[in-house]
Image: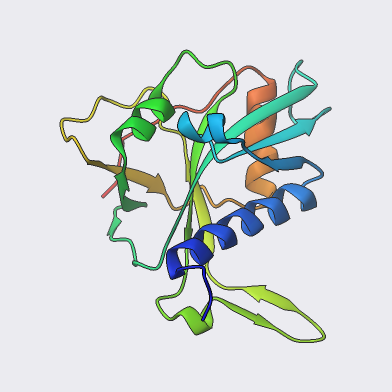
Length: 183
């Protein structure tokens, strides 16, 4: 019996996922320390320019709050509806006064634990996908425990998406939250 719960394993897989994407994009990714975690930051990604289509900033930092879930998210228009638990972390992510932009990355895993990964001599496969959303500028929650957020399906956390995001940050264009769900 593993000392790690299923939730612990989900969390570790989300770290592996973002490390893999950041590495392939030519960026560094490090696990945040205990104090950063208290501020809603689980990892930090650093990229160095020049960025294709980028701007004048040559070194870009991005702070990440990670979540993983086996629950299939409801689709509302062109977004996933995600129940974000933890209003303190939600408030930390929606701040507009941070130097480094912050995003939420949610890894959606298959419902069955045995389907999460597969490996052979030819491949290591982590099933399903992660998506990102910036909550910067989002409205305050009227709830004390959780907040529904809408994650655009087009904002897949992949190599191209990460490079594009870092390029926009290098142009001093941090991403903002939009509840503009198209139905």
